[in-house]
Image (cartoon, rainbow, N blue to C red; front, side, top):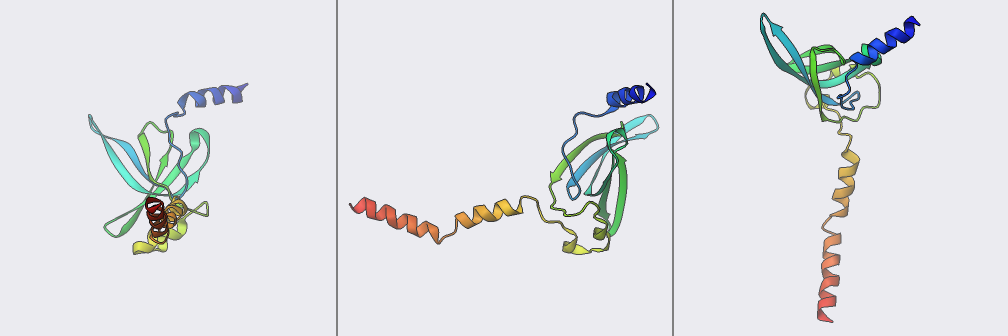
Length: 144
Protein backbone atom coordinates (compact mmCIF):
# COMPACT_ATOMS: atom_id res chain seq x y z
CA UNK A 1 0.00 0.00 0.00
CA UNK A 2 2.80 2.43 0.80
CA UNK A 3 4.38 1.88 -2.64
CA UNK A 4 1.11 2.83 -4.32
CA UNK A 5 0.86 5.94 -2.15
CA UNK A 6 4.42 6.99 -3.02
CA UNK A 7 3.75 6.41 -6.73
CA UNK A 8 0.60 8.56 -6.54
CA UNK A 9 2.44 11.43 -4.85
CA UNK A 10 5.30 11.22 -7.36
CA UNK A 11 2.85 11.21 -10.27
CA UNK A 12 1.45 14.57 -9.13
CA UNK A 13 4.92 16.15 -9.11
CA UNK A 14 6.02 14.98 -12.58
CA UNK A 15 6.23 17.67 -15.25
CA UNK A 16 4.13 17.06 -18.34
CA UNK A 17 5.46 19.83 -20.60
CA UNK A 18 8.95 18.40 -21.14
CA UNK A 19 10.26 17.98 -24.69
CA UNK A 20 11.84 14.77 -25.94
CA UNK A 21 15.59 15.00 -25.37
CA UNK A 22 18.43 12.52 -25.55
CA UNK A 23 22.15 12.28 -24.99
CA UNK A 24 23.99 14.44 -27.53
CA UNK A 25 21.29 17.09 -27.83
CA UNK A 26 22.17 20.75 -27.32
CA UNK A 27 19.71 22.21 -24.84
CA UNK A 28 18.89 25.43 -23.02
CA UNK A 29 18.03 24.74 -19.39
CA UNK A 30 16.18 27.68 -17.83
CA UNK A 31 17.00 27.65 -14.11
CA UNK A 32 15.24 29.70 -11.44
CA UNK A 33 17.75 31.50 -9.23
CA UNK A 34 16.58 33.12 -6.00
CA UNK A 35 18.79 35.87 -4.59
CA UNK A 36 17.29 37.27 -1.43
CA UNK A 37 13.75 38.38 -2.29
CA UNK A 38 14.42 38.50 -6.05
CA UNK A 39 13.92 35.64 -8.45
CA UNK A 40 15.38 35.48 -11.93
CA UNK A 41 15.86 32.90 -14.67
CA UNK A 42 19.32 31.99 -15.90
CA UNK A 43 19.85 29.96 -19.06
CA UNK A 44 22.45 27.19 -19.08
CA UNK A 45 23.23 26.17 -22.67
CA UNK A 46 25.16 22.98 -23.38
CA UNK A 47 25.26 19.39 -24.59
CA UNK A 48 23.61 16.59 -22.64
CA UNK A 49 26.39 14.13 -21.85
CA UNK A 50 24.44 11.88 -19.50
CA UNK A 51 20.88 11.02 -18.49
CA UNK A 52 20.22 9.07 -15.35
CA UNK A 53 17.25 7.68 -13.46
CA UNK A 54 13.61 7.73 -14.37
CA UNK A 55 10.45 9.26 -13.09
CA UNK A 56 10.84 11.89 -10.41
CA UNK A 57 14.53 11.13 -9.87
CA UNK A 58 15.55 11.62 -13.52
CA UNK A 59 18.57 13.89 -13.97
CA UNK A 60 20.55 15.20 -16.93
CA UNK A 61 24.16 16.33 -16.95
CA UNK A 62 24.81 19.25 -19.29
CA UNK A 63 28.29 20.33 -20.36
CA UNK A 64 29.28 23.70 -21.78
CA UNK A 65 32.49 25.63 -22.32
CA UNK A 66 33.01 28.94 -20.52
CA UNK A 67 36.29 30.82 -21.08
CA UNK A 68 37.97 27.67 -22.47
CA UNK A 69 37.04 25.76 -19.33
CA UNK A 70 34.48 22.94 -19.29
CA UNK A 71 31.56 23.34 -16.89
CA UNK A 72 29.15 20.51 -16.13
CA UNK A 73 25.94 20.82 -14.17
CA UNK A 74 23.49 18.11 -13.20
CA UNK A 75 19.84 19.11 -13.22
CA UNK A 76 16.91 17.17 -11.75
CA UNK A 77 14.51 17.26 -14.70
CA UNK A 78 11.32 17.47 -12.62
CA UNK A 79 12.65 20.00 -10.10
CA UNK A 80 10.73 23.25 -9.56
CA UNK A 81 14.08 25.06 -9.94
CA UNK A 82 14.15 24.05 -13.62
CA UNK A 83 11.69 26.39 -15.34
CA UNK A 84 11.91 24.76 -18.77
CA UNK A 85 14.16 22.82 -21.11
CA UNK A 86 14.45 23.74 -24.79
CA UNK A 87 16.10 21.46 -27.35
CA UNK A 88 18.15 23.62 -29.73
CA UNK A 89 19.86 20.94 -31.80
CA UNK A 90 19.63 17.16 -32.00
CA UNK A 91 22.99 15.44 -31.85
CA UNK A 92 23.81 12.05 -33.30
CA UNK A 93 25.29 10.12 -30.36
CA UNK A 94 25.99 6.41 -30.58
CA UNK A 95 26.58 5.84 -26.88
CA UNK A 96 24.82 6.58 -23.61
CA UNK A 97 27.59 8.55 -21.90
CA UNK A 98 29.58 11.18 -23.78
CA UNK A 99 32.47 11.51 -21.33
CA UNK A 100 34.92 11.49 -24.25
CA UNK A 101 33.84 15.08 -25.03
CA UNK A 102 35.80 16.18 -21.95
CA UNK A 103 39.06 15.48 -23.76
CA UNK A 104 38.15 17.15 -27.04
CA UNK A 105 39.11 20.70 -28.00
CA UNK A 106 37.85 23.04 -30.70
CA UNK A 107 35.66 21.87 -33.56
CA UNK A 108 36.24 18.22 -32.68
CA UNK A 109 34.01 18.84 -29.70
CA UNK A 110 30.96 19.14 -31.97
CA UNK A 111 28.63 16.24 -32.57
CA UNK A 112 27.06 15.43 -35.92
CA UNK A 113 23.54 16.65 -36.41
CA UNK A 114 20.90 13.93 -36.35
CA UNK A 115 19.31 15.31 -39.55
CA UNK A 116 22.62 14.99 -41.41
CA UNK A 117 21.49 12.09 -43.59
CA UNK A 118 18.34 13.86 -44.76
CA UNK A 119 20.27 16.97 -45.87
CA UNK A 120 22.62 14.85 -47.95
CA UNK A 121 19.69 13.23 -49.77
CA UNK A 122 18.07 16.58 -50.60
CA UNK A 123 21.32 18.06 -51.91
CA UNK A 124 21.95 14.98 -54.05
CA UNK A 125 18.55 15.28 -55.75
CA UNK A 126 19.14 18.94 -56.69
CA UNK A 127 22.56 18.53 -58.31
CA UNK A 128 23.26 20.56 -61.47
CA UNK A 129 23.73 17.33 -63.47
CA UNK A 130 20.04 16.45 -63.30
CA UNK A 131 18.75 19.99 -63.95
CA UNK A 132 20.17 20.38 -67.54
CA UNK A 133 18.56 17.08 -68.54
CA UNK A 134 15.18 18.39 -67.38
CA UNK A 135 15.76 21.67 -69.24
CA UNK A 136 16.66 19.80 -72.44
CA UNK A 137 13.42 17.80 -72.38
CA UNK A 138 11.44 20.99 -71.86
CA UNK A 139 13.12 22.56 -74.95
CA UNK A 140 12.27 19.52 -77.09
CA UNK A 141 8.63 19.62 -76.08
CA UNK A 142 8.47 23.37 -76.83
CA UNK A 143 9.88 22.79 -80.37
CA UNK A 144 7.28 20.13 -81.19
